[in-house]
Image (cartoon, rainbow, N blue to C red; front, top):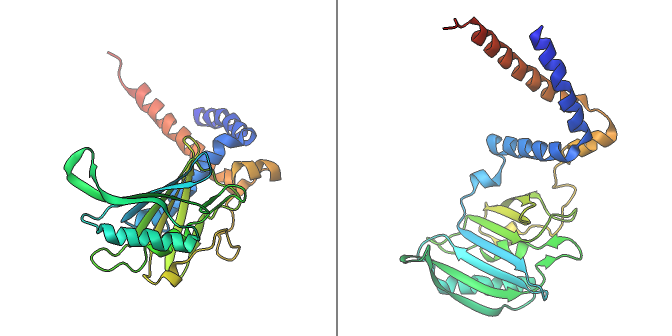
Length: 258
């Protein structure tokens, strides 16, 4: 009987979740992203980052870049050449390009190779597009032992739009993005399966044939009515939680009182 009452008490919480989709949308995204990671589908799990690219939009419109090589002793002239290749693909030369060694955590013994510069045409807020293909292609084909297999691209201060590429699986590249709201951030994790720049090109915007079908969220559930295929697992989880509480109560009540 206690278990039945627990299930009844949990039902309003489910109804409240139906009425407040924002709360459940975050939970659904977390669950589905976690499922991808657990199943090995996530590029965040399979790719090791060799290059970290940070991009942000300047108040006057320029795209500011900071690129850091994770591999130690990464040649400065190689990174300089890769930046020039990237900007050539973008179609806008680098401005104020500086490449050199920087200390990590203030230690002169721990250094990494870093490039900073400005360019244009990567963050297109008018169209809601982030151009990642020139970045990826520029780092393909580096000689050993500096071959790049994984790239992390962070767009600081940007929010996703319908034109933001979220995932892409091509013959030579895998790409996946996650977004944060506070602070605004879109991070791409890129896994290079080929070192041929032509084979690692990705589209600027999502392509229907390469994008997975959009997953249901609490918002779409609320608009389309109750989707029992979505809520049944939540109900089962609630009952399971109620069962656990019920047996804990039995165990507690069975203990002798001193």
